[in-house]
Length: 121
Image (cartoon, rainbow, N blue to C red):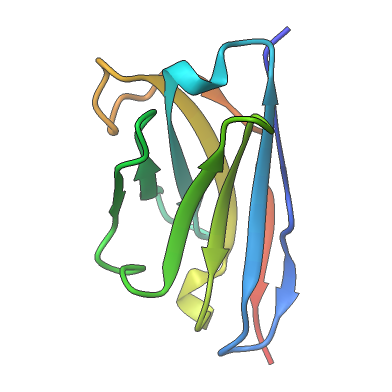
């Protein structure tokens, strides 16, 4: 069955870094675009970063130049490297697999269960 399992979240101090991973199974990973979303407490779920099946990337303005999305098709895994973290980055982070013909704001696709990232001193 389809599975997306996020890992790598945790508590980090402001200015610190974390690397999230999302390991997928049950579908042809290399055929899908991958997204990272996040939901902060009391807020809507927001798109953070996108990587197409050919490796093109796009980022939300709030994380541009601080976060990097990447993928390893051999490992069926997508990553989110997060640097210079601040309190506003505190959220549950979700990965999502999406067929390319759907836009990034498409609400369907395959979703992971989320991983908590807390930025606090």
